[in-house]
Every structure is written in structure tokens, then in C-alpha cells.
Length: 479
Image 1 (cartoon, rainbow, N blue to C red):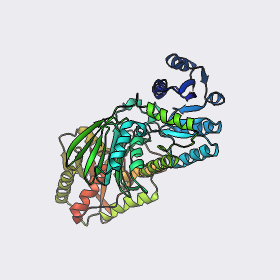
Image 2: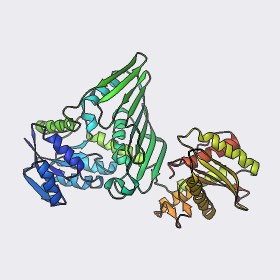
Image 3: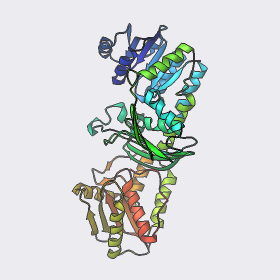
Image 4: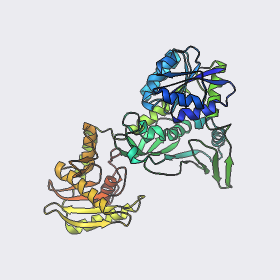
């Protein structure tokens, strides 16, 4: 019988304990946390022999064989290492670590102490996932070309900063919901991930991330968010068809689409969505194995590496990024610019905006007298968008650079705030200076898109209007 101790008595620990009770070879022996009252309530629902206020004391209990680590993300490394050094096998909630460096340290500690560690990436263990892997391996959709995985849900803004999901250290959508998407890329795509394009809404933590990476055998588009509700699906596209997986974080149903038609598979859980990973982990312990063959150390390290690559594209700016933004201003500076040019440029922006998922407000201002020479507001935009555009314009006026440059610099310098000077400045991409003969003569403003696409739209339109070509010198994600 495997005697379990739980580190952390939160919501996810309650669900785990429910499932653990169904395993014939496991028993919940102890639970630990910070509040005795909360622990007693937990033990009333999930009977166990001991409760520990504090985590160290539970790890000293020699009766415990395995630990389920369900503490906030930022504490995973610390308590995984402590548990492993006490020779406790660890099943750690996702993400197992905050970085590749942390994961390598955990893996090395597990091996040094000859003790099992595994990330609780539960989708990999359910029956539907096994069937999905078999079909892809058998070439039902041909050679795999791409994976698009989306895991978004809405967190009320008033909750930001009040839970470990929405704080700068260890928080954010990518590490929380997006880790399921990253795990799919790690499992099915091979080779080194190369960034293609990343969009993000970053406010000290990523509220939304949309990142495309290129691998040796295909591309992955990984989407995670706290600011919108979208289908939590994964789409595997191959040379002969596609597979659409519903609820990728706890899959039961998926549909195979080929020239022969569509076939939907519904493969129920074994008891529940937690049970299969628990059963796998217990089997490893019973067999004396120190590494999972489903969630290997290499897989966990590579998964963390992929998140590192994505994070490197989000709000981690240096002087090279500022130089790229300055280069945009230089390369896209027109020889001359008139009100007629403003009309042409404004129309170019409006035309390109149709390629995006929402409308925009566009304004072009002449600096000599602060006159609006072009303005267009799409039907889904409001007066607030013009207010944001005005704030972005203030960034350009006071810095001499695009508002994207101001955003990148404030993040780089650690002085970032969404608003500066009581709302006068709106620090995000979307306002761009037009230099003529070394002097800013007009400021182009776009508001309404998210994740830095306002800035991207301006640069694309300027390039198309001046040179009839696509501009490619973008940096990472902006705002």
C-alpha cells in the first residue's frame, strides 16, 4: 500500500484526493498546509491519519512513501527538492518548474537520490490520448504538419494579483493553462523550437499569449489566456487530414477528418481524469522504477525549454530590441508627408485591419498644430479607443519614439506601469512617429487590437504604402 502525503490543501488537492480514494493500492496518510482550520476541513472530506501545519514536518514523517505537490507554481522547485532529498517520491502538479534550469535541477536531484519524480501532466495518461497517439503514429492523417492548441478562460480583472496565477513570479496564462498546449508540442514535434511570431498581453505576467514555433517536423501555435473564453481545443493537421481534440486538458472526444469522411472517437476516462496518472505513478513505485516512460525527465526538461523560448519573446527586452524599433522609425521615415498622404496611409491601415480579429480606431495627427488630418473608427470601437490613442500619442511626443519603444524601454528598465502620469500616457504599442528631415511631423495612432498588433498594423501599412512590400523587422511581442 502506497502511503501518500499532500503538500497544499487547495482546490486541486481536493480533486486529487477524490481520485486517490479510488486506487486500491493507495491511501491518503497525511496532508499539510498553512491553516489548521483549512486542513481539518480537508481531512473531514478526505480522511487521513495526520495533518501537518507546515510542510517540513510532513516530509520528516517516515511513514510517507509518496508526495503530491500541489503548492503554487513558484514553490514547486523548493519543495520538490526538499521532498526528494527526504526520499519521498514526488508527483508534482503542472508546471513542474518555472524554467528549464529549475527542471534540470529537479531531475538531477531525483537521480542523485534515486527517487521518482513526475509532473502530473494528466492528459498524457488518459485512454483517449493513447488512442490519439496511436492514430497519428499510424499515419491516419499522413505526416504531421502542425498543431494548434488553445487553452483560454476568463479571470475577472478584480482577481488579478490575488491568486498565484496572476502574480509576476510564477504566474501567467502560459504556465497555467498554456502548459497543456506546450506539452502537446513537446510530445509530437521534434527538434529545437524556433520562434516565428509571438503576441502577448503582458502586465507583469502574461494575461494572454499566442506563440507560433517551428520544429523539425512541423509548427506549433500555442494559445493561452486569462482574458477571453475560446474553445479549449487542439487541432492536429497532417498531409492527409486533421484531428480535432475537444477539451485538450482532459480529453475524452476527438474527431478524425480525412477524405474518407469524419469519425468521432469518445473514449471515457478510467474512473476520472486524475486516476490514470495516479495509477501510472503507483505502478512505477510498485515496480521500483525511478522514471516514468510516459513523462520522462527529458520530456519535462524539454517542455520547460519550450516555455523558456516562448517567454524569451514576451516582455524581456534589451537594447537590441530598442535598436530594432528605432530602425523601424528610420527605415519608414517618408521623404515628405502631406494630408493627402495621410488619407492614403489611413486607408491602407483600414484595409489591412480587415485581416485581424477585431476593428480599430485610426487617427493621424499633424504635430505643428495638433490637428487630426485623418480619423476612422470601425463599428466595434468606442470613444475609449480614441482616448487610448491620445495616450499613446503622448508617449511619442515626449520620447521621440514609438509608443512600442516606450513600452519596451519601461519593461527593460523595470519601470513599467500601464498608465504613466495619471492616465496621460498609455504605454503599449500603437503610436508611431513619422520623421521628415529629422523632425516628427505626424503621429500615426491605432487602437483596438491586442497583443502588440496595433504597432504591427501601423508598420505593415507604412511599409506597404511606401514600398509596396511586407516589412519583416519586428521584435518579439509588444504590449
